[in-house]
Image (cartoon, rainbow, N blue to C red; front, side):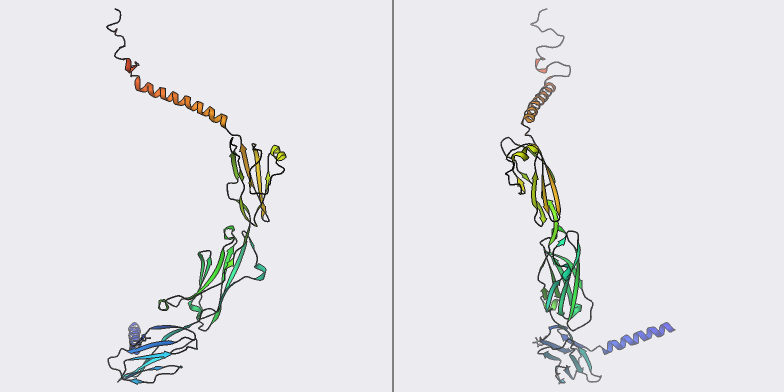
Length: 356
Ligand SMILES: *[C@@H]1O[C@H](CO)[C@@H](O)[C@H](O)[C@H]1NC(C)=O
């Protein structure tokens, strides 16, 4: 019984809502207007019989226009953050009803910038955690704002804001980072976008000035950390120690004793080295900067001309052996005789020309 009562009440209330919904069509249904910009819309009555239409607004209304079914309205310059012009219709035998035009007044941010506490500016050390703050100044409405963080060509963070304030506000987004060597030299920027919907065509966006990342890291070799290099009879060898690092690495070389004594005058602060005396032994190179020293080892070995000659001779012998073996398979029949002599020398049978 009680349930029926509630059910009945629901039907009654929705019925009431349906009947109070004013049958007016707004074109466009939603208006996005920049603060200071103009608004224009049409209101059309969907009733079969209506006496007239009118617009009501703090910017001045139209008064009731009798005998029209469509009525235009415009505001030259919007100077408020919340406006609600209303269109009303007068009907023959029911009360007047009205509908509000949905208007969003927006303002693009006056300024978008990346900030860092003064104590945190300057280069970061690899592995260090830090944060950057993006301030979006005087943007409206905050509920339509999206902040995008760009690192190089990537979007690394996106933030929306829940704030029902219609007038301009300052919004901040914080980006947490860990200094990585690959970030050194990359640019971070922050972009503030207003999601005005497809009606507005382009999505207005304001981008901050880029913030350059500087990460200090110890030298890392471009090639493997240990290399074996073979001396050559006709060409000088060069050892490469090139490393990346921030600050730029400085290099120093260590040679086998014999070379050390004879290469006093070589420029050994280069990332590569062509020893003037091409001698085997263990060489090493230090790449250093303020963040540390990395060591690369080279094992320089004798040219192996003798060994290759020996290998060639052994190879030739093996090849000959294989050739003989394959030849044997082809020409020797299963009973052990040579196939090409079979007609002349049949086993156990004297030939006709042989002695009896
Ligand atoms: C309103 O209607 C008039 C006449 O049909 C049309 O020219 C005008 O573009 C319309 N304005 C809007 C904002 O839809």
